[in-house]
Image (tube, rainbow, N blue to C red; front, side):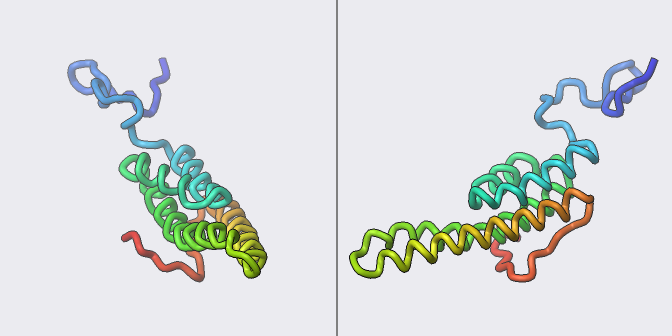
Length: 136
């Protein structure tokens, strides 16, 4: 009878993780890579997806913790800048300039996030060349 990798019975025949909620179990290698990849791809939507992945999965997978933090640090400043630019769109005369700026920010964020997600999906860590790394 084959046992799941997470079910290593101890001397008393119980699972190593008995009594631990399923959402607190360590991630498998493929799950770790998957969530790390999604943290980067989430940059398309701003910093919220990488923030959620960082907060939920940082204790469960080392690769996810590392990559979600990198994605969050990268996506946070452009998200803030784009939100400010979108608010400034309502200023008469110069509002169109801020609309273009907000659009360019989202396009750049999307391109860099997708490229990083593809890189991380191969199992390789990614470091953005331009990253403030506010969150340690």
